[in-house]
Image (cartoon, rainbow, N blue to C red; front, top):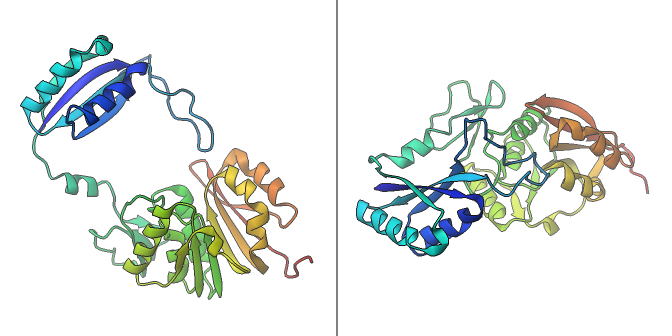
Length: 300
């Protein structure tokens, strides 16, 4: 394979990418900051839940992959001949050595320790000898592989407070990892819901792979009250969902929330104050886990 390396300003990145993929036969196109590691480097992505500081980098490097040198050369010739692409610069045409891309990708994901005895392990790895409970989970379309602090904190809370919960609601289930974790720790009926159809499909597949029973569906599946309600989303939707999530809590039930930055704890406490008191139970890398317990007697 061969890689075509181009330089373009912000306004040309999208049309160049589209032309490479749709018209010129590129197998893939990646974009990176051309000013990375220099004084001109600028952050592109903001904090979760906030808009990006800018739409793109001022100068970008585009890397287009082609099956052979002839295709890459033809693509560069056709692209640079276009009047609208006059400011696009050709930087290099490089041979890409053969590699086992599947193995290289898999090497990025290794077993994740939740506790000493509870691990999240990709299917291509052996579980550590100390692992008494294991979630087998491969990276997919849905969020939640156990590598993010919010997921780890939720799973750790489940492991440390394990009991035979009669019902559990995982709201915004993503990959289903929290629902599966609850099932492995003795939970009974589990409803895992998400607005994203891909998340529902991923949760069903992951539950089957881990040999646990749960119902994965869209949010209208959630019904009644649950002794444990889990929601690892982001602060803004969690704030809006306060009345709904609390309405699903059984008397004496626990609410476990994640996806919250340290600076957002006050906002969440205020949103849930009419129903319960939220407290920070764990902190990791700027993220917090907040937990509240509903009164044993629900107000009418």
